[in-house]
Structure formats: C-alpha cells, structure tokens
Amino acid sequence: MISIQVLSAINRLLGAILETQPPEVPPGKDPLIAHGLQVWQYIGITVLAVAAIAAVGFFSRKVEYAIFFAVGLSIALIVFFLTV
Image 1: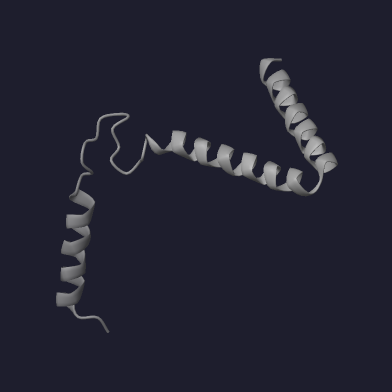
Image 2 (image 1 turned 90 degrees about the vertical axis):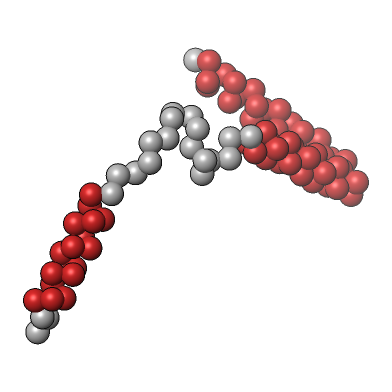
C-alpha cells in the first residue's frame, strides 16, 4: 500500500504543476517556430528538382520533355483549381 506521506507528496506535486501558467508569448513571436527557413526550403526543393530533371535529361531527352510537360500541366491545374 502507498503511505499517506507519498500520497501527500504526489498531491503537492500535482497541485504545483496545475498552478504553473505557461509564459505569455505575443502572437507571431513563438521562439520554437523558425519563421525564416521556409523560403530556404523552397529554394532547396527547386534546386533539387532542376538537378533531377537535368540528370534525367542527360540520359534521355524524351523523358526530360515528359517531365517538363507533367510539371507544367500540374502547375496549370493547380492554378486553375485554386482560382475557381
């Protein structure tokens, strides 16, 4: 069985946890979110995509054209469905 002292200590600990308030953070200033890195992610993804298409185009020109067509069609459909 659990002693009364242990139960009392657990009760005090839980009470202290429940009374603790989170720090006030102004909206848009959360220190845990890296706000400036999203642009670099897009740049990196674009560079990787161009490098992949160039590597494929080095081996097969038809596949490169097919990839360009698919990317262009995807962009056109995304724009179309976002504006409709």
